[in-house]
Length: 112
Image (cartoon, rainbow, N blue to C red; front, side, top):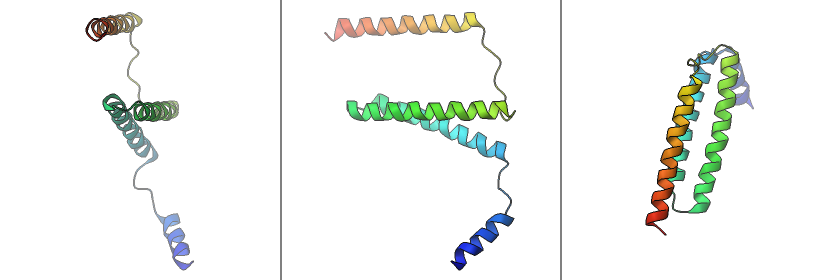
């Protein structure tokens, strides 16, 4: 009981090590890293159940990261990059779609 009271007394008089913005930016960066790790784990998994688990963890982390990003942006704690031109986005989507189609064709031709 005495230790808890001492800890509470110290905690109430102690300044935070990092400002809120820096702390949140650190958490945001960690969520980005964690998402990449989950993605890698899902990609490298041989077991469908494990792959699904890492995919769900990745999606949950992406959702949390998006919520934190939005909150930080609304509170002027994060400067977003400039908006992409729609034609550039469409061009990338088309390129990725073509690559996906080519990959699917390759798999069908070589592994059926």
